[in-house]
Image 1: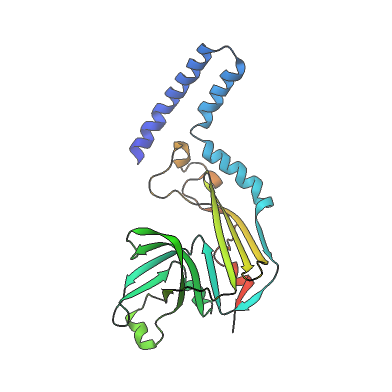
Image 2: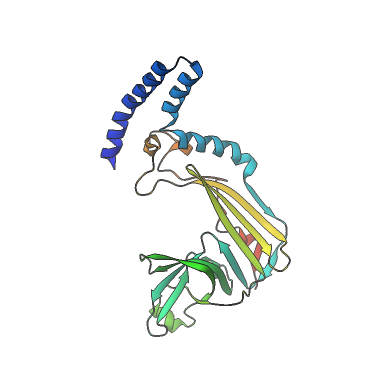
Length: 255
């Protein structure tokens, strides 16, 4: 990783200067000459600069956490990002196969009796291949194992999921996101399924640290700049994220 980065950073200033000189010799128009300079400067930094402008401009204007109506419910139904992936595990004794929804166990810790989710991806084990599902399938999950004895055999598995034809929950939590340069813009909407009425909405902006091979442009790979520009730092607006917990403020677990 660092050798290509070093080579790119050594070569780029020379290539940029050569490009600017080439443009200046080919045209006498000041606008084109200055555009060449701006292009050479922004090419390796555009994603960080654009992200910073969008982040600090949109942070006070775009982010939102609004609750219009609350309800008590026995379960939650999800559509969209974050809970749309199913993990298939090999079962023992009681089941030949156990299916889990990614991040689904949080709902059971909160006291909900079941969780439903529209699944678009299935993964074989925690490290297996991920296969797309089309059209999407709805799975319903319940706490598992049911007895203390069977919990000893499944210490890390909190729920099991089966495909269903009908959705039981009266409400839906819809999540989506948009990628923009280094940023991810997140949306959460909670609605009454029968009436379509909006019960709550949440919006936030985040920047994840680079994982694995960094992206081009290369100046954003460095760690000498701080805040939104720093490659290995997570930032979000609002600073305390409710991306995975906002629905619990709107849909209360029925006692």
